[in-house]
Length: 73
Image (cartoon, rainbow, N blue to C red; front, side):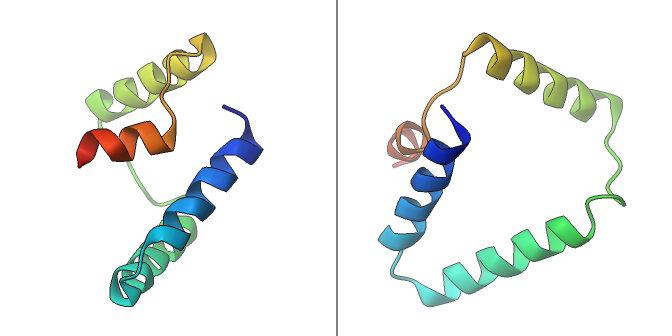
């Protein structure tokens, strides 16, 4: 999935949510994550999971955001 496809998927997700409070909390969390991205420390296990995710992405072993959401329902 390309960056533009991810952006479109996120836009579609946000457009489909009618809960303003949820969207405000999500926006607040994203802003906090961006502001504190340098301060977050990962354990060895967490870092390993990040590396596995990157390896899966490089191999193309990923699902779309829509597929992920539909599996969670």
